[in-house]
Image (cartoon, rainbow, N blue to C red; front, side, top):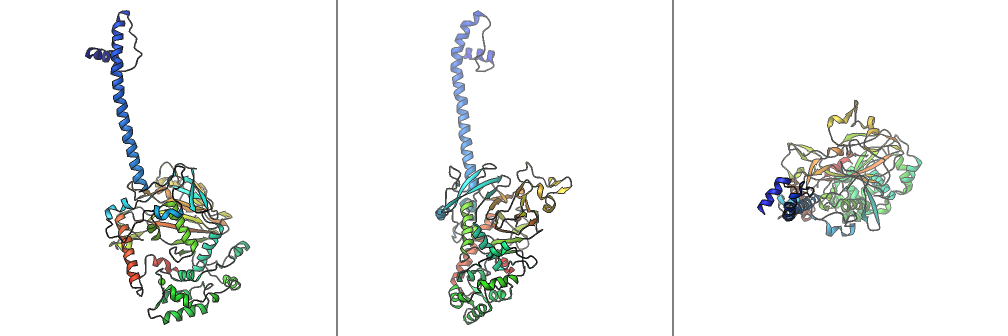
Length: 505
Ligand code: OGA
Ligand code: CA
Ligand code: FE2
């Protein structure tokens, strides 16, 4: 056995191949003996090799599963056919609900317990069916992998777009005096939204603390958007407020003093509209409890699609509505910021002692809703999407700066034409590999081409996440504590987060 193995190694260098032919007839016997030995040696070696491969394969599979698990957070997101496994109705059970009030939540475990899921892009052009509403499904198309960018046509109905535009107009984003509204626009503004008492309360409650403060009513009376509260309404509300010992109105108090029948009617609104002044090109709409049901539904759809914890989404910026007119554009930019030790996130600033640091926006993802179609121009451009590499120097090509959207809009790798009701979703950050938010995705650079004809209305929904998950956890606990405190003593005026954002009225 030992001899023959040596022979074998000598003659064939340990190769198990069978192509050797003994050249001389006297070698025949030796050769056949050797073949017997060789086949047994070969099968053992073969077995060892197969076993090694098998183990390496198993280890690879386990590694891959662990990688997928930690990248997607707890709970796999996409069912076999690529459709999300949870519809809006079963979200409550499926979502990992962080309970910021729970004092036993260890901050170290935060990213483990509340991972940030990411939708899988699969490949450019891949279409997945997503279930966002009980009565229909939507198609979501992967537009690029760097950044991970999706398009969802019909995310909003045209009617819903109209409602959001009107709510923004009511809140302070007015028709421009300089442009005469086209007939189509005039029609699209009709009829004026019929707002319930609760919705009027929500629009007036600028800091969204569930109470109407004197300043909020007074600031409204000073604003130009008096089309949905006439002087009588305002006087009644102020009188009611002054009569309240607490100096604030709860929703119940408000119901008693606000007379819906006195709200200005449609015939007046046409006249008032002609007096609209453009005060701002953008405004913020709160989407939480008490807000218009379309705004709440939009937020629920976002939660359903992204599978992000509803608490996290609920503590994010309000919906930003922007109006672009002829010639308006914006240069290419990132919506979020790279995690750096010398900066702190604006949204969690109240939970930190980092007041000396520069505040930056921390936005894990962007959902952009097109609330109108644009006749010409106004595309959203992603100049470097899916480039092989990202280098800042490469942004200047032949002396042309790709971030200068006005000049180079046509050269972007991806250009999305605004189409009413379509939503875009992209991730501004990569994963940190442990289920939390990591580096800024440089490829998420985007800009807006100049509007050439028509008016462009968009809304941005940003989900704020602090790359420092301990800071995010502290912030959530702090908000929960303040909410508890507030429900304990309603009379105290405690502005919640984002109150500053509502001061544009
Ligand atoms: C933004 C933005 C794109 C668009 O508001 O930050 O990039 O096409 N918008 O409106
Ligand atoms: Ca208030
Ligand atoms: Fe942007």
